[in-house]
Length: 174
Image 1 (cartoon, rainbow, N blue to C red):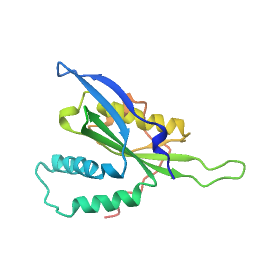
Image 2 (spheres, helix red, strand yellow; image 1 turned 30 degrees about the vertical axis):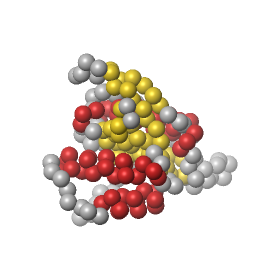
Image 3 (cartoon, rainbow, N blue to C red; image 1 turned 90 degrees about the horizontal axis):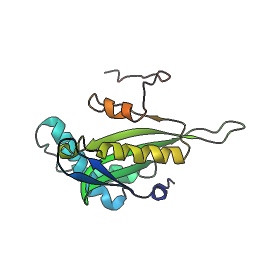
Image 4 (tube, rainbow, N blue to C red; image 1 turned 120 degrees about the vertical axis):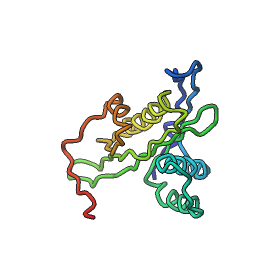
């Protein structure tokens, strides 16, 4: 079982380059009680990319089922501004097979980093990413990998990520 509560809350102030006020950022671990909020953020992300509302009456139920199946192997963070959900990120945790002389180690796949458009370029993405990497460092992860969107590459580079030249990829054969 993963122990997400050990990291606790991350609070910080993010100065906005475009606005004249400061964003009060709180990043916290999500729980099963946050499933409707996470589903709403996921829907907002998909609809933003689609440029329109997506008609899927069963989505929220499917999301709740997915979360229930995944929560034992994922750590999810929610970013909030004054209590309003503004972003999310999750880390899929993989435990490596033990080797003689060494115990098992862990690595993570960082996924689903999303920040609502009104909160971008104001530090929330960085705060979510910092919570994730701090967790991974505290628990001795040997690596974090991800598949970034073109838009997110600068954020990851600023946060110490670089090209993965030691991994191979088998793309979808279709």
